[in-house]
Amino acid sequence: MNPICQLFGIQYPIIQGGMIWNSGAKLAAAVSNAGGLGLIGAGSMYPDVLKEHIDKAKQLTSKPFGVNVPMLYPNVEEIIQIIIDKKVPIVFTSAGNPKLFTALLKSHNIKVVHVVSSSKFALKAEEAGVDAVVAEGFEAGGHNGREETTTFTLIPTVRKAIKIPLIAAGGIATGGGMLAALSLGADGIQMGSRFAATVESSAHDNFKQIITQTAEGDTQLTLKELAPVRLIKNKFYHEIQELYAQGAQVEQLKAYLGRARAKRGMFEGDLHDGELEIGQVSALIDQILPVSEVFTQILAEFHHEQKRVAQISL
Image (cartoon, rainbow, N blue to C red; front, side, top):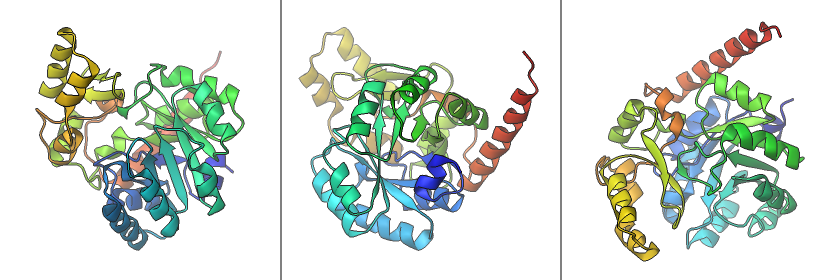
């Protein structure tokens, strides 16, 4: 049996990214109901809102789901306690030290997965006792690593370094991408951008539509001095680049970014002044689909590509 399917009790080794402003209970439950693992994105939720989404997800699915917790937020301890109290079975942590909460969560029989951007951090996560790691390549949307290592290079490097199950993320939105990731040594995949452009995503329709219109070269990793993030090149992005050209310091960048910039873009639909976080693979996404159709498409492509590759002779 596939190690990721066995670990989480799911049918397919397909995991939905816990994207801020996209990943509510509706999306997480739809992915879990389709046979994958859905994640609620706690990064854009106040504690009471997270409680509501966990309760709603339990009503919408009887299958396993999890919560994604970026550890750079100030109320992270309260978030962790809610997850424990609500008996959420799986937690994905990111943007922080995996040692902080792994032992506590595992003491409550919660499976823990940590997101990394290098083999060095993958080893630290393994040493911290996590059950699996997500190795996320430079192509990914949203907050990213500083190393700029692409998924094609990252996955075999991490696979060589660790013994625990490995999930590939960054630049995967097709069945062919899934096959490639597994061929490189991953046990499963995590997709963010593809699930952001679904009917069940909680993002604004404006944001979903612009994902389908984004072409090659329309995204860029920026704001490395704060927290590296891949954005669509809109008015806000170009203004950030102007600040860089003027020699802006960290405090100036932070002041311009302000608060709720991502909410304005992805949740409220401001395509000009909002922060629009999406991956390079958005260039391959041209339809907003129900989650069930995404699964049908991905699995059909996977089996088609598997057969095609099997016929290639060397």
